Length: 167
Image (tube, rainbow, N blue to C red; front, side):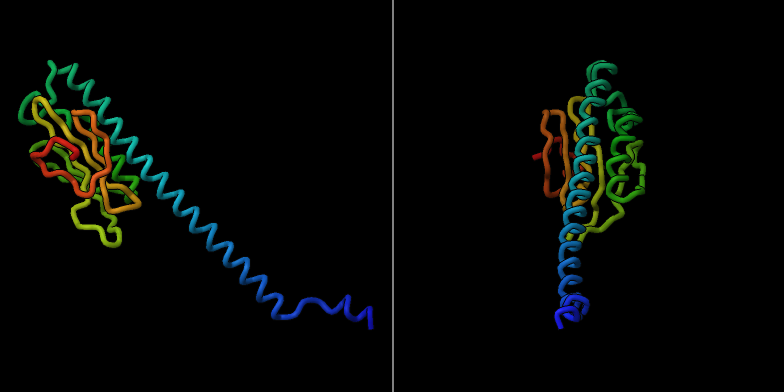
């Protein structure tokens, strides 16, 4: 009798309990990995938009201390700034949609977060003395914004085209 108890194996209940525990642990790990991925995407977007500040200052110093040279040439039409905005939106979607208006590209985030308002666009506005750049974040329905006053902040809505501060 003692020998038969040692060789009988696991019961169905024991196997189901082990499988359930493994399933719960897998769900927790997968959830944590998704949060880490979203956080990494947001960090990439923030860095791309922050790099616009450096490019804007280089443009400003190289073009007679102005962010806007003429009606079609400004810090926002600079190829490096344009590329950084495109890269920020690429992180959100994998691809982007560019619509050019008056020589300025606006990159539209194609993804639709649950509860996110339409019009999740990355944009850049500039006049002679001010600029603003904004891009949608990947994990939440908000935006990352930088402006010529030195502000770099998360904002709930994208500033309008005539607004040059991230307030």
